[in-house]
Image 1 (cartoon, rainbow, N blue to C red):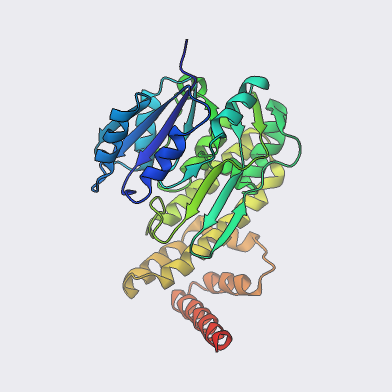
Image 2 (tube, helix red, strand yellow; image 1 turned 135 degrees about the vertical axis):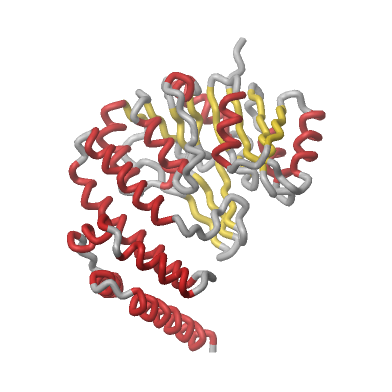
Length: 345
C-alpha cells in the first residue's frame, strides 16, 4: 500500500518556532504521511532538533544539506518524497489538526490534482488576524475554468490563496512527469511561478472554505527576504513570464494590468532604494539604471495611474532625474513621520 502524503519542511534558523511547527504536523488526524525535514545548513540547533524528532517518530525523515536557500531545500524534499501527494509547510508556521484529513478527502472525492485552503495570517507586528480570500466562483474547477479564470486571476495577483504553496495538496505525479521544481536561481516569487506552471498541466482544482494553515508575520520573519539590489531584474523577469502566459493562452485583457503592475512595483522598489541603508552613490546608480532601462521607459508612456503621487514620480522618471526622485520620496517620508507625531500628541 503506497504512502499517501509527503510533507516537506525547509528548516533554517527557526529554533524558537520549529517545535510548534513539527508538533502541529505530528498531531494530524490524518496519519498516513511522511514528514521530510530538510535542514538547510542551519547554524543553530535546528538540525539536532530535527534528528530528535526522527528518533521518536518513524514517519519523520531528516536531510542535512549545505545552505542553498528555501527553493533548494524544497527541491531536495521533492526528490526524496515517496507520497502520492506532496505538500509544503514553512518552519515557523503551524497547521490545524485536521488540515490533511480535509485536503486529502477532497482530493479523493473530487479527483483533484490540487486542493487549496485559505490561509489565516497572524500579524504579530500589527496585532491583526486576517483570512485570505479563496476562489468565490465555485469550489471545483476543470481545465477550461483554470485556463480562462484562475490563471488570469493569478496574473492580476488577486488571490493570495492561489499564489502560495503552503496551503495546498498536490498530486506528486505532475512534479515527476513534467520535471517541475522550484527555480533555485530566483529569490522572489518562486511559489507563484511554480503554481502557474502546474496549473497549465492539471485537470482539476478544488477549493475548501475552512482556513487550515496558520501563517505568522513576525519581525525578522525567517523566510522574509532582505533588501536585494537586483530586485528590479526579478520584477522585469516576472512581467515577461506573465506576458508569455498571456500570449500562450490568449489572455488579452490582463496585458495592460501586467504592464501597469510592472511600473507600480518598480516605483515602489525605487522608493525602497531611497529609504535603504545603501550609500548615496549606490542608490543613485541603481535609480539611474532603472530610469534608463528601455523596458521601464516604454511602459512609463503607456501607463496611466489615478494616484497624483505616482503620476508625479512617473513625470520625474521621464525627466531622468534621480536626484529629484530621491528628494520627493524623502519629503513624503518626512511628512508622513510629522503627521504621525501630531497624531501621537
